[in-house]
Length: 117
Image (tube, rainbow, N blue to C red; front, side, top):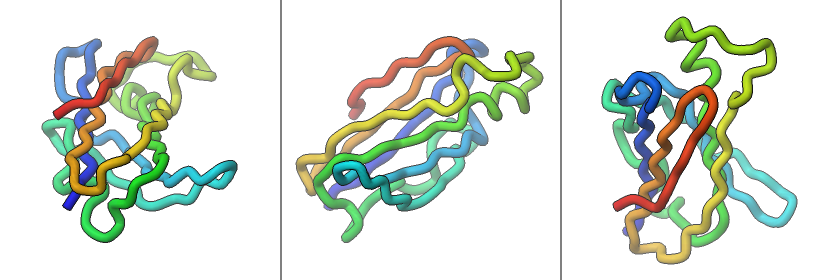
């Protein structure tokens, strides 16, 4: 069975992105369906896969990482309208038996991602 996981790294401080709220949505055309919300643990990961089992279906998905609130909680002074507030990553799941890992490397002013292992 396939599964979806993530890992957030705070590149400003060189630490895992702990306590970051992450939302998962399924995208079908113009419709976006909320699936679930998770919070990263002290290692910047979720305690269980974000998506797995019967819910793990091929298609287009979207992860929303709430990074501005993370940095504000750490005492980072951000603009009234932060440059990066919510980081949105859209991606496709094609193989229902595969492990898809979507890491996020983030700072208040930049981010990157890739298909991890």
